Image (cartoon, rainbow, N blue to C red; front, side, top):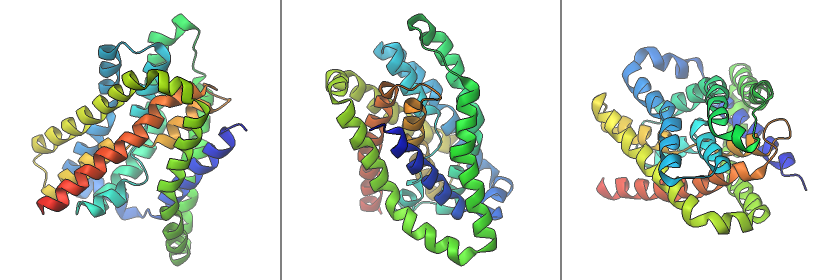
Length: 281
């Protein structure tokens, strides 16, 4: 079975769920609390550079280098709001950062991936149909977000009920997706697990460390720091998997392997962080 028929509906539903939770005030937070928003977005947008450095240090092959940068280019994950709530962070900031990064990366992701593919992909015959990637992102991400926002505006009670159901499905859906890809590519994953596992863990730890430093530079409050660390560390793995497996873009599930391992590790690391925060009080 072609996994694209699973990943695209899951990604679309996750983005629709995000739209159902958004209001105008979530975007106005840029004006009211610009420093916190700027810190969070800076951490998110520096992720591809960190991924590139890790890939070069680890001497990853072109496919895994592109895959690692791909997951780093993706916006914050849909579960980051829940993690922020568990860590007693700033949930309003988390919602705004997830929404803004989801929209901004619609355009930054194709540009960055074009540069990376040109740098390491052409030597092994890998090309990126950038127009197809942009169109797929608009259809599977921006459009569902906009539909969700419209429903929230005209039918807030209905939107709240739907969002409650979909939010409970987000994490199981992502794990199902990761499980399917793991089974499909288990030999490649097992063969490269030591290198790729270390690479994604390095990227995750460097990312949250850099986010922590940014928070001190921007002189943010404790609740804001907790949220930004989670937001930067948690990436939308469903989007990376959709791009990797899409017949309109890379059409090769191997590009998704770094995203699959990252999805697993980010939950381990960030749940550990949430536990530490709760114990610390």
